Length: 295
Figure (cartoon, rainbow, N blue to C red):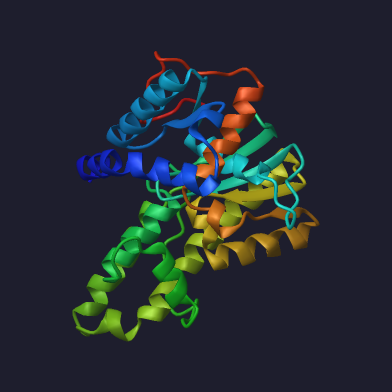
C-alpha cells in the first residue's frame, strides 16, 4: 500500500537517522555527504527520502549523491569484508528482489550492462504471491524457504516459461500453482495443509532452476568468469546452493553477500554513494526521485 508506506517513512525517518548516527558514534557535523535512493521504488517513499536528504545536505552544507537502488544492491559486493573477496571485473550479477529480477554484466563500479530482466513478476514477487496462495502471510519468501526444507522438490511440477533470450517471466509459474490448488481442492479441502511443505519445495525448486538456467546462459554469452548474486531473494538457501553448484561445474567463482547485505539496507546505499562521490557524480536540489530508473 504506497500511501501507508510513505506515511510510515515520514514517521520513522527522523528517529531512524538519529539512531543510526548515535550507533555509528559520530557527530552530525562529521558527515561529509548524504547518499539517498533516487529510485526505483514507490514514489511516495522515495519523495520522503529525497526531501529529507536535500534538507539535511542543505543544513550541513555537504554534497549529496543520488543512488540507483538496483545498482546499490550490486555494489554491496564492494563493501569491505575480511571473510569475503569482492568479485573481479567484469562479473555477472543476478539481482533478485521483490520488485526486480535482472541479469547485469558489471564492467566497473559505475558501468553496468543490462543483459536480461523479467517481463512481468519478479522472482521475489512470485514467492510472495505463492505464499499468499498458501496462506503463509507476507513477506512470504523466507517462510517458503523454511518450509521447503522439509518438502519433496519433485512432488509437483509447475510451468516453465518459454521466454527467448535472457529475459524471464514468472507469472506462468504463479498461475500454475493457483490452478493446481484450485483443481486439487475440489476433491480435498485440506490439499494445501496436507501438502504444504511439498508445495513450497516444488515451487521454490521451479523458480530457482529457471533462474539458474538463465544465469548460466548469460554467463556463457558474456564469457564471464565471476558470478555474483544480490537482492533480497539472494538470501534464499536453495538459490545460494544452486549458484555455488553452477560455478563449481564451470570452474567459475561465486560471490554471495552476507545476509544483512541481501535485503534492502543502508550500507549498500552508502557504498554506492561513496563510489559516486569519488567519481564526482553529485546530485543537487533539482534532483528528483524516479519510480523507474533508466539504464
